[in-house]
Amino acid sequence: MDPEELILLAADTARLVLESGGETYRAEDAAMDIISSQGGVEAECFATSTGVILSFSGPDGRVRSVVRRVKRRAMNLEKVARIDGIVEELRADAIDIDTAALRFGEAERIAGRSAAAAMGAAAVGTGFFALLFGGGWREALAAAAAGACLSALSRVMTRHRLPDFVINLCGGMLAALACLCARELGLIDDVDKAIIGVIMLLVPGVAITNAIRDTIAGDLVAGLARAADAFLAAAALSAGTGGAFGLWHLFGGSF
Amino acid sequence: MAAPILLSPPLAALVSAWAQPLYAAAATAGFAFLFGLGRKDATLAALGAAIGWAVYILAGALSDTASGALFAASVAVGLWSEAVALLRRRPATVYMIAGVIPLVPGGGMYYTMLASNEGNSWKAVELGLQTFSAAFAIAIGMAVASAAARLLEPGLRRRRKGNQLPRL
Image 1 (cartoon, rainbow over the protein chains, first blue to last red):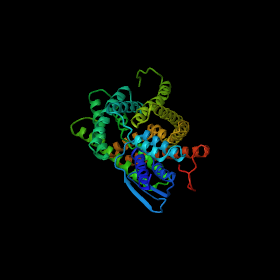
Image 2: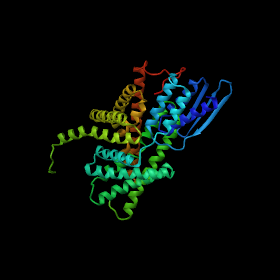
Image 3: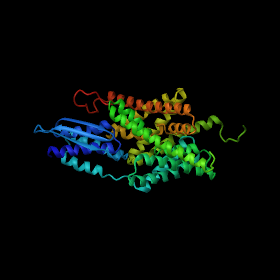
Image 4: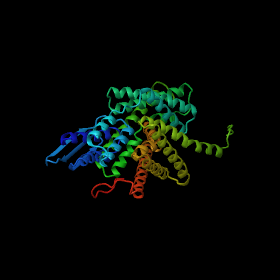
């Protein structure tokens, strides 16, 4: 593989790790390991949650560099694990770079969940979270129904390439309105527990935790970027749920 | 209040304490599936979440701060994830990200929003700080677990090239 192809492969791999929700250092290490496994020297990679900068010196002594932006992020831990395994094998010389390139391509093409499966999983997750946070069975069922709707909504909005801010805003609104309606109909008593269960799908709790982990690990810029992302998501979600409460009140609903 | 209750309060508390790790596991399994994990990995992550929640309940009974209990729980999730990762030869973060979800302060964020929506700024600031310190405690717990795993398993882990310090 010539050096140009190699650097593109390494940068795309780092981008894929970041897009799938892997840690910043994992993306950087993956890119640098791919290059050094092929005899590239002075490989340096700088990654944040929005992009990758990678450079290295080839065997001919010329310096090459490439920039990759990360625009879309969708948590897929299977991709992260798969890429980690391929890089590990490459480092151990168990496979050659062309095989690795093929398998990176396969990992990139791992399909996400189908709409129905995602809705089912979201319903299970949100329902049990409502139970865990102190709701009863009726709150859990309401949360599960709202969670399935929320999953479908965010899927549609993602497909239309709406920014995460808008998705969180509308998602928070949907969660709050659905649960308020359920209470108005007498289906549930404790609207808070149901709403918390539903918005677990959107709350950036993992993002905040990862931002702090990045910062502790020394990736300060990446940590700050992730923290900003998490803060914005929390703000959007708050505005959505708060707005829904406001609307509910405006149209004469009770709290 | 003479409300009819089927279980005496301590017994009811015990039952719900037993059920909670199961709820945490089921919820985590759903989220792990959403995050693309296969059946085996999702089950292992869910087990980690159950262990984490059990530790959270136990530590909550012993410690008087929520952050202390969250720290202990996330250390447990982190150690479980590292152990499973060694056995399955996959990165620990896969199990950690899914297993820690029940602990992340979603409720804290929601109540912060509710307080600021009611115009109660002091309460919102207080809840916001609590939420942040909860997230911080979880992150530190995970970092401590990873560091402990690096120290305990030096032979099984790849040594990083050069003289860089190991990542947490």
